[in-house]
Length: 222
Image 1 (cartoon, rainbow, N blue to C red):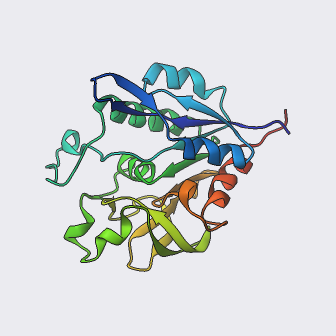
Image 2: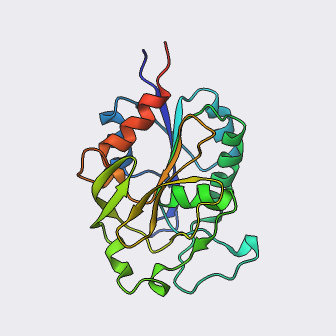
């Protein structure tokens, strides 16, 4: 079995001199390596990602800033800090392309899970603080308990948004305060979203174990 090639979607950021960068935090790359995969950075360019998909064995859609919901006819919450529009366009284009490749294993992390949900018509909670008095426990890499089919224990979180419903997905995890923490498409071999950051979670099952599930699903004879 050869090592699977795992695409990791890049974020777009602008440095203090106005230069635009396609970037991925090392924690994602390191987690894929620990799980036995070979990481491949996917720039936020529709055509480049499409050209690479046929060469990949799996995809990770990473975290980042918020979804701009205005293109969907929804008013933007004042607390929202939206991602670069080029990244948002590239992420939704990638999800559409992956719909045509249902056998491709996909893992959405934090924002990645929210993108998966919005792509399929789920409702986005734009600010958890409007619903939960202690919503800050989900931010700043704070640890909180999760019960899920992937494992049970403390996870590292950094988000102020979440999915209000799972739409066509199966709910496979929630936090102790009811926030939707993990989803799965039961019609596909491996299409999973987690609201926490497994690449920064210490628990073996809910941390590296989640990334390893993706990499194992992506393995194929070489």
